[in-house]
Length: 92
Image (cartoon, rainbow, N blue to C red; front, side, top):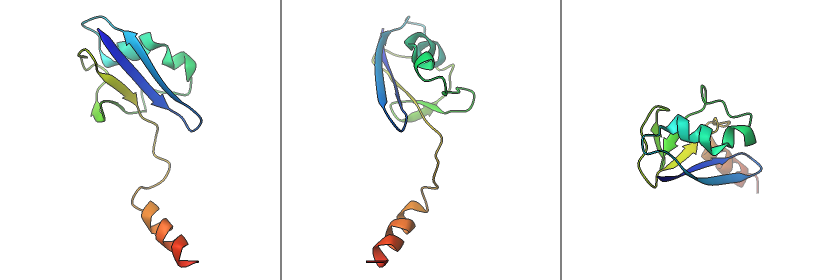
């Protein structure tokens, strides 16, 4: 079956299409894609993964056409980002 694996770091975005066995799991497809060699800083024991924007587990089964996404850790608290923007606007 055809699936895709997507990952973005601060410098580049990668979207790989691969053929995976019909009984493949998320983790098996990530390994087969070669993305872990391309981005050795990916740590699947720490980083979350999802399928089409929904969090999932590494042992989740895949269906044809799925897009696996590997998420980076959040480096800023999303709740404070708008406050910073409004604070910056007041300085004008």
